[in-house]
Amino acid sequence: MSNPPRLQRDFFARSVHAVAPELIGARLLFRGVGGTIVEVEAYHHTDPAAHSFRGRTPRNAVMFGPPGFAYVYRSYGIHWCLNLVCEPQGSASAVLLRAIEPTHGIALMRRRRGISDMRLLCSGPGRLCQALGITGTENGLPLDRFPFAIEAATAAPKIAVGTRIGLTRAADVPWRYGLEDSRYLSRPFR
DNA sequence: CAGTGGATGCTCT
DNA sequence: GAGCATCCACTGT
View 1: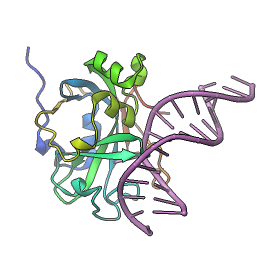
View 2: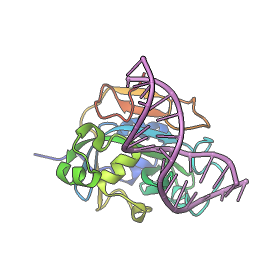
View 3: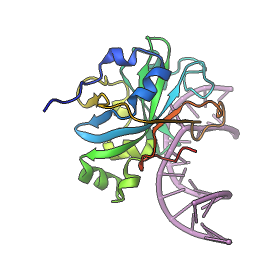
View 4: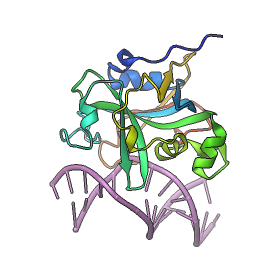
């Protein structure tokens, strides 16, 4: 048995629009807990919806650093959201992880989430961070070493494309990518 | 199933 | 002080 290759920094050093769909079907593990990525969104620095659009601030500083690192921010004062920094350093672009299909450490994820319904364990950016135990302390950590491990997709999945969720600005561009017909999406594609 | 509103804290204006 | 890259509970069909 040979495991799929781990994604290294050079994988992320490309356009978010190339990286994002290739993350669908990859496996994300944090301290050995996680599953298969089924939904992501791309945020380019020229995009008014990106945190980096208005320039560098203390919060988004990691986005301006090298690719292959985690950008974790607090959402609505309550939740944490995980991004993977992409493109050459300074591009300040990233991919938001929105949903995974749980495969590893399911009992622990259920305990952290306080629910048992598999479909609600990791189907949403805040939900998946809660299930995996990712918080602001992980902001700026490299993605190619423990506690992170990201394994490349083993087959080319069918990719669904749509508009991003929860935005007021740049709500019309189709930069949301998902695994077609997955039961674990945060919302279905049209 | 669709729609609404509250929680909650930080960032930036 | 406004505005969130969200989630959950609750309402009404």
